[in-house]
Image (cartoon, rainbow, N blue to C red):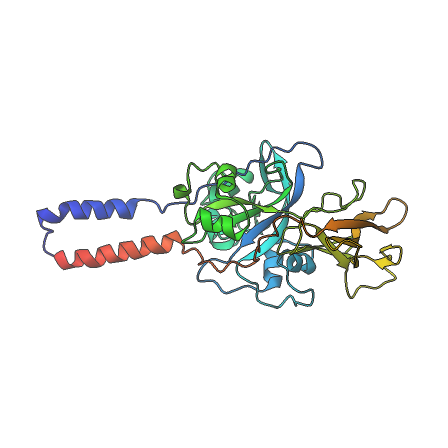
Length: 367
């Protein structure tokens, strides 16, 4: 093979530098979570999950197993899917997963779940990016599990995957924090518009200097406004928060609560298909839970609203009559689709592989 001309040596040097450089890794996300009161320091957060490019679309059952969700119904509820949807149905992409969040030391992480059992050939980076689609970094997993060498993990080892989350108030109001991986082509303005928040809020929550610093693959804390409710402060589910685009099953699955599309009030109904002998009746006099009636004023609507459930002496579902001014309900909830139509993130390693192949192809013309 003829020696490379001296004029091309700088090109070769640059190529070798690129080849030796490590692939850029996603930045570790740390969501502020300063709540300290016993109940305020725990909450239910939402996580966005999309399988990495090149992998088959999983079923709902597969996603449930990956995140160790306790029920199929909970996965359906988080995504606003009908309760009749079977576990074998393909999972929408991306999918919302509701997980418990715990605040500790000023930051939040999902509590105990999900976990992952190491298989032959696994590295922490492969688990972080190839299994959990960049929701965490290998550094996050290593720190949470006291792993000194990310490239050496034992087959069968059980790893806790600490997905970032938060329980903090935003602007003095309770919200549902949404852990969101930025897709290719995503912008702060488009994310704010899609999820009904503001650019300023996203920048502040994520400690970003400006909108231009947003990166594809970055993990963002996106606050979803939750509906207000008439739930009693003494009820077991008094901290129930439901954002638009999803619902929650509560009161031992006897009550289904969603966020109204016309007001910011919790809209709860008795869950259809459950035995009436198991679920106690929820009524306000002659009105059943969720029933509404018009009052003498055309701007007022009276409803039998869900007020929580108790189980101190016996299981009981509480309900109260509430009156809503429908003429001054304020801004209606911005639609928050459970499944974004944005482009999925292309893995960084693929782009670097293409760069190396192109460079080798180009150099072959000069040797």
